[in-house]
Image 1 (cartoon, rainbow, N blue to C red):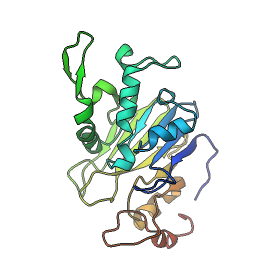
Image 2 (cartoon, helix red, strand yellow; image 1 turned 180 degrees about the horizontal axis):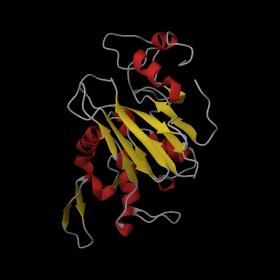
Image 3 (spheres, helix red, strand yellow; image 1 turned 60 degrees about the horizontal axis):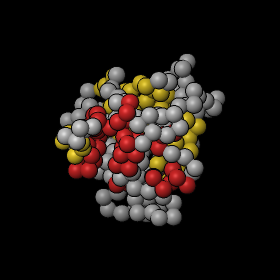
Image 4 (cartoon, rainbow, N blue to C red; image 1 turned 30 degrees about the horizontal axis):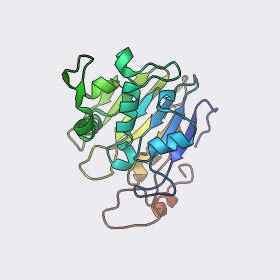
Length: 248
């Protein structure tokens, strides 16, 4: 596994399982070389995790979402409403500026994000008090894919690439729960070549894929569980241990 010069940083606000109280649900801070801050996933405990870290929703450029489960997205409603109604630290509210924080997610995942948020976010009023049927774009600057790979096992695109400022990232479908849109992330860490940091989101161990991307991967972040069970949907630690040393 090659080592790249440090140009980006990653901070975990929560790294526990779906039902964790001690370690928090999934929410991590990706800080780019130019200082832009992005959140990767926004679980149910994210609002409190961000507050405990001495930060506010206005500190972030946007959200990157891997898939829709509560431990990854249930903080998004709070994020969307706070950014919509409140200005802070020189960052204008979405209502005032008509420009929301950015959202990056595979198009199949994005559909499920709105299915989850719509019962709360759909119902709004404009400045005259008239009813507004809000959409995801009411709250977010939704970043569309700039590149994609054709569908494979499922009906949606196998991968979608995104660019926003200095961020270059690929959301690639992975096996989490069969038939559910869920993506790993390939985060570009170099302007000179195709090296990446790989982020699993939630998925089972795919040895062949991990071996295939190892030559261009500087670091792997794989979700892990120490308990195996029928219908496994995470990276069982014993299987991660069996991966080649270069991947481990």
